[in-house]
Amino acid sequence: MRTQDLVLQSDAVPGGTIKKWEWRCYSGENGTYNNFSIKLCHTTRTALARNFTANFDGNSPVEVYKKSVQALNPSPRTWFGFDFQTNFEYDGRRNFLVDVSWAGDSGGTAYTYWSPATARCVYNTNGGTIYLANYLHYMRITLEPNAVTPTSFGRVRAVFR
Image (cartoon, rainbow, N blue to C red):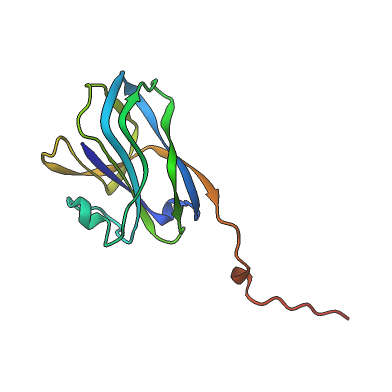
C-alpha cells in the first residue's frame, strides 16, 4: 500500500522543523503494518499525478519514520501518529508531499477523516491500480517554526536627535 498527500504552502503551514505527523481517526481496528515508512518531500506541484516518482518533482524525499513492524490501534475520533526519527526541514515556500507506504499487514485498518480537495491524494493497494482522489486526509503536524533571520529585516538605521 502506498499513499501520497499534497500539502500546499497556501495551507498556512509555516517554515520550520516538522517533528511529528498525525491523522484524525474515523474508525479503526487492531493491526500491524510491515515495512512501514513515512517520507516527506518538497515539491512545486499544485496537483498530484498517478505517478508517485513524478510527484516528487525531481526532489529527494526524506524518510522521517520507519519501522519493520508498526502496530496500530487508533480509537475513533482521536488523533494518532508518529514522532519522527528524522526531522524534516520545511522551507515554508514550496508545497510538500507526505508519502506513506507499507508492504503487507495483519488486516487491521485505520480509516481517517478527509476533506474535499482536487487531486491532492494518490494511492494504490498492493501494487495495483493507482487512484487519484479529490480529497486530502485530515492531518496535523508538530512543527518548530524557523527563527526569523536577520536578513528578513534588511538594514536597520537608527536616527537620534
